[in-house]
Length: 401
Picture: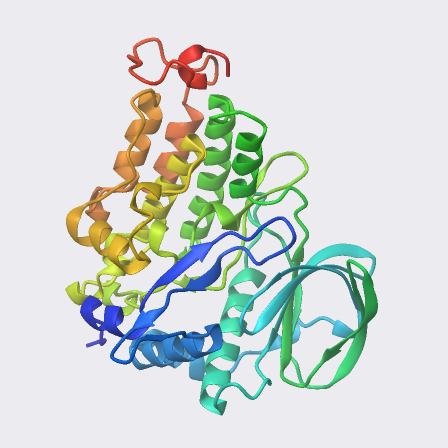
């Protein structure tokens, strides 16, 4: 039987993983903020590379059997390999432990370039191999996806030789060196930013809520993309507003398949703890149950995303004093959920509560969610039967949305 990591052991080994969004200057969204670990002799700071290495050991030790087998299976890159020497990097968009994301061009087309390099001498050959296979699995998944609500795959480079390409950033121009172990993936460049940035900018402009019709459309676009993934037996596993991008026509495109994987035939074979705690389903957080999980974990995350779209706030902001792992325990063990404002239209209340039900079997399939949202009333700010008990300046209550 597949080994599943007990929650108590994960708590001891990984400490606090707190995703946060970076500022507009280009700090990587979803970057991990490291908490200080107090143990014995005062405080010891853990840097990000050390944490990545520790997480590799946890993940690889407890990786499900089907994932271990996939890591050993050869991958033929010929179907998607591009000539990376034709890439030009124009702007750095974000930076992580072992990679960077850039706006760039490839053969005259504007693209987003995700570059991964595991040749920095900061990890063992086994660790580098694990991350490389994880990256190639991401590429294999993306290469088989085509949907208007999912970022389009352009191609990828699997490494193998060293060369330089032209690169620039704000106030700098030069070259970028691809080492033999450097890999990259090219996706369509989505210019509108993330859904999270969208509602943050809206609040900065003085709006406490997004218009009801906008929330419905954002949710519907996301639901359609997710329903497509599930029809292909693909679990995203890290759905959050940072990974929902907006194009020039305000259409949502699901991005970042770094944690995605094909759904296993057995639930217990989907038991690797992964994702972002604030959006993570209880069955994913609580590995001690040994039940595994399936695509319904994405449905839970979707419910949290809809709450954020409507409330224009970060989920569990009332628990800001807690470390992420403790917040996750409250979600998994105590059924804690973000508070739904009393002025929320009934259709959205019902959608949120059904999607984030503690029992995965009670959550709807995404194709049902699509039908619910397609049938949603798209006129007016609030249903006439909805009793408003909210702050009088709430946009939905005032009828000014």
